[in-house]
Length: 212
Image (tube, rainbow, N blue to C red; front, side):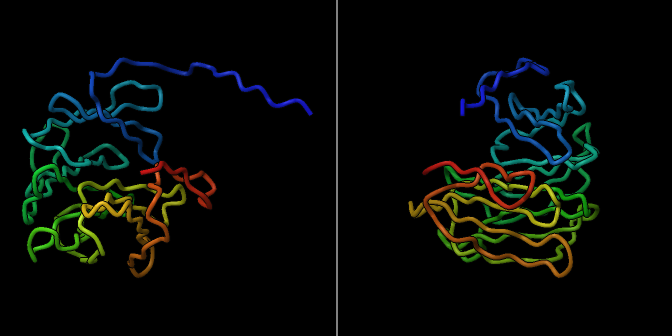
């Protein structure tokens, strides 16, 4: 049997600033973080929304599924803003250390999930907060088992789970977690530390990983 030959077909293209950070959303949009701005591109790579970023905002930011707001993971606080950059609410947390940053994700169920440092001091395990997207009210606080230098939320296609990949500050690889988004919320750690999830298969039964 001859191997299948895949021929790429260009669907859309656009230019992005140098050193941009790219992300995607479950709704098919793309996010571009560069030059003090978080830009949302639709599936055809046309601009759907823009959110200005404050100086020093080096975390992993997120945009709501309807692009009505963005959650910014800043060095010492989590801020939800509208398209013009107007703050809707903010919640402060202990500051990340040098070279460290947090992450945020907005679900279709109206919650924000954010990785923040522990109040117990440098090096203590991080926490994964679940907040009300409309008000910033705390709903859940899950203690993780590592302190990370950075983290990336990974949405599951079915919307039932939210994955999280954390780079362990102690140099022990990656820690991978999964949060339940329906029913009683909960967080569990997935096995392995040598590979970091990068994306989840549309079927939700496997994921793409990268090595440390």
